[in-house]
Length: 331
Image (tube, rainbow, N blue to C red; front, side, top):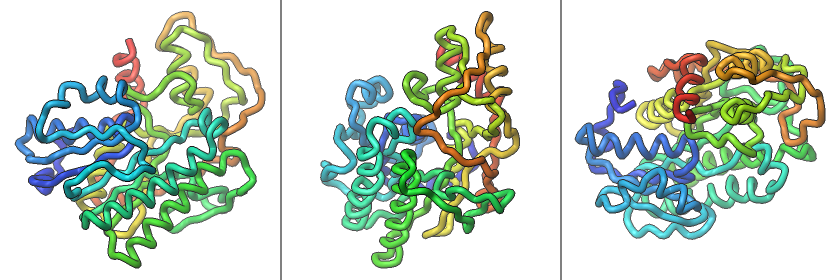
């Protein structure tokens, strides 16, 4: 990723805070910044904030004694235990797992609302140059009229739906960012990410379709679909997602949202299951329609990625190649 044609030198002498640093996207952002420092001569300092020390040491153990790396083990909702200044923030802390949406909806909302306000207050005190916020395609809600959704589109959300803790709190967080921009001049960009996946994603007890199906294949279990498998998804590989976020950091218009998705290869859940099952002998795909608590209940609408493509970004990793990389990592 460090070889991508982005103006990495703009990070020279800067300090970057990454929240949720052990998450899939955030860990790649953190490791890319460290790679730029070590191998590309970019004098960037990294502050990685997360709650799980053991997981953080697995990811970043070789950097713990480096002067350009700082690990903060804490909740994003607590006062940030960092005395220096921060130039850029990737606010990526949060959880979209249906498992936690079902078991900890208050925690989901607390992170997206209290955590985001906490980060923005710190950013205001630090006079941070820009905040990049990881949002979701789900903020668009249910929209049966549009064939594609650009950044101005909107739909309805049922506040009483069990899943709404996630998209509603992301919506509110986006409005909070916009409010800080209008009232305090806090520069930000929201990035509405769709179905990202990659080698370090959690494969057990996650609830998202790619993670669950991958987990089945890696452990040699049959894939059991709880639906007819006709729903479509378009999956975005982690490196494409991370380069998209940096593209918006460098080139995005302050105060704006950008869709980030790979709409070149939409596939049905059933076809995805068959593709994944073919990677391991003996794994079968079984249809067993049942309750799907915690999942999005309305049809998928493609995202319009014209805005971010105009900044120079495009997806590079095909679904087949991305799946291959995930299996190689988990072999």
